[in-house]
Structure formats: C-alpha cells, structure tokens
Image 1 (cartoon, rainbow, N blue to C red):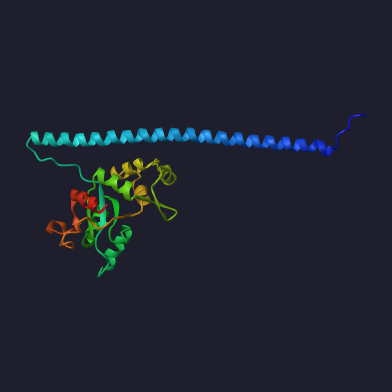
Image 2 (tube, helix red, strand yellow):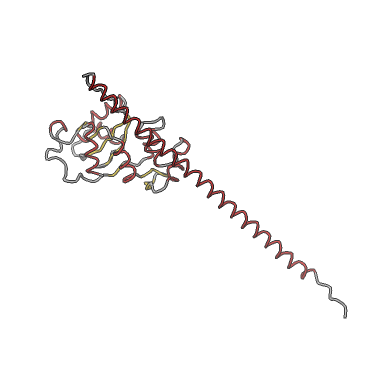
Length: 248
C-alpha cells in the first residue's frame, strides 16, 4: 500500500503552529530582555541616588563645620559672629479670613496659603519680604533648618501631579515631574529647597502646600499678638523650627 500524500491543509497547520510558537518565543525573549534592562537601569539609578545622598550629607556637614569655625574665630577675636543671610523662609498660616481686606487675601492666595495651618517654602527676595509684611497678622514664619526641611518633606510631603495631590512615596514621582531639572529623588528635592538652588521655583511649586496640625499644647494664649510680644504672629527667625516640630 503506497504512502498517503498529505493535503495542503495538513501541511499548513504545523507551519502555522510553528510560526505562532516562534512569535511567542520572540515576544518572551523580548520581555525577558526588557525586564533585565529595567533591572540594570534601576540598579544604576539607585547607585546614583545613593552617591548623591552621600554627597549632600558631606556638603551639609562641611557647611555646619564652617559655621562652627567662623563662630570660634569671632569668639577668639572678641567680635560678634554675623551668620550668612537666610535665603529660605517657611511660612505657615495661623489665622482665618475673618475681616480680611482684599490685598492680604490676594497675597495669601499667591503664596498658596488658602487654609489655616497650610505651610510653604519661599525664597527670600525683596518682593517676598514686602508681601510677608502685609500678611503678617495672619502668618508665622522664619528660617527653617535642614532637619525641619527634611521632616516636612518626608512626613508631610505631597507633589502636584496633573493638578492632583500625590504622596511622595516613590522617587519615580519626583523624577517624572522634576527630572528635566536634574531633580530625580526626594533627597535632590530637599537639597534644592534647603540650598535655594537654581530650580527652587520649580521644586517649591511642585510641592503641594503642607497641611500641618495644630501645635501640641496649642498656640500661645496671646496667639494673635506678634511673636516678640509673646504671641505667635510674624517673623520668629530660627524659632520657626520649634513651632513646625510641634505642628508636624
């Protein structure tokens, strides 16, 4: 009995299956390759972030040591130590809108201080100084230290992503929104804010106004008096750090 010659259909089915299998294998190989490349890129990114964080720590330490050295030199020479002028201010709103004239209301809107206990970082400029004077009866402000900046960003930090308030739970959120300015992680963001870097405006605008709590133990009994009169309003310079700690 002679061998049966296979039909075209019988030949085509295995060929179709073979092509499908090859296509699946190719797709699988491409997926595996993409995963490996992503892993390698993430590892490299983590190393970059770690090195930057180390560099910042050293930079902050060096600045603190230099400050201490200058303090000692001034003391040895029996002269007053004059610290460098502050470049960064943290402003927190502590009073509502009751009986507020239009001008201060507009300034508070510009500063994004729309609610009581909202806080923002601003750069020291002549214009900002004048604005703060106008709204002084509604705010407390001063010069935050590194610890305050870090604690605020890590504990209360939210970014503005597509006009939405998004928690800074991942460096990727920072990189997606500020990567074009060289800010790719939370430590970069903190450094840009604290040092008032060249992209401070973009960094501070990315941060959603901080929503703080009432201070532990409450405000002073004379809350709506100026700080130097025993109240809480106005410029408290370095004492802002203690207030923020109570509100954070």
